[in-house]
Length: 390
Image (cartoon, rainbow, N blue to C red):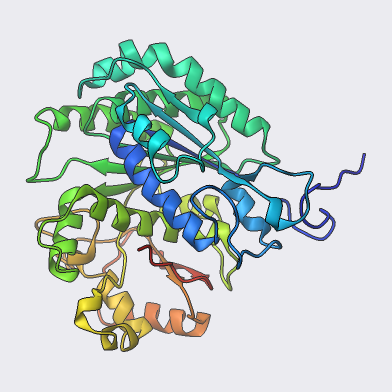
């Protein structure tokens, strides 16, 4: 039976959309997940209510990997309405109520905002064994509905923190269920880990340890993020004297959006969701990534600092331990070795420049690789630069 998409050009002319489903769990996961969707909306020219802006491109089918088109019977972009392919879960209602009343309240589908009435109280066991367990079936049902509405799901992105109770306990439970129900699909986690010196929760080290035990088995790739490292970047590079969680979430959103840009836009060298695992994970359980973003610049320094950055400068900045989004107090370039590196460039960067920079990084001993894993750089090129959010 031949089928034709009711929105956009026929399937004969375009590649099949490969959807990515996002799951945001717990207060931290939901709040920085919101910042990520705000970033996606700006990059795809979609308003906070889900309507396309005037400069929206109706041929942009790749955005359907993250957004679901609601009015599929209407072919013109003016009547389209887009909803994130996201399930938002928390064990108490405060954070989700903020979404229901916030600037992006019309963007999210209300059915996929799920909250219980009693939170996990920063306790992994409550999130994993008692209150979380009571809500896992409802969460799985929402995920199943999203996958049923998709043509060909390529994987899942999970936003959560491992220091609290819901993000660690229920987050582990959701990942465990995903690995049973969707065994062959990629699961990439963006995990906010406890910081070395800043600690809003006394027991977060225990929650983090217990959650890591589950992440070892149930995610294909885990990107480690850390509030303290991002506070330092904000204070040092952006001159924000007293950073808020909103500032921190913006930086995290830029990092997440840059990793998923290859799935949402065309580029000279694109990186598939599975390629992160293939290129970066030597052993299945050894999949925790250090991430970094460059350049982080303040407008206060003047526009010249924006123009003078070469590809080499930006890459050098990214490999500076001070730019890492996770804090290592004693990182040593010569002593601490990499097993694999993926560099994803956004904007006007050609493959020749990218390869030259990779060779320069190696030749100048900016990085050291382990002896037993003679790998190099995985390079991704994407034409679409990140968008600034006011």
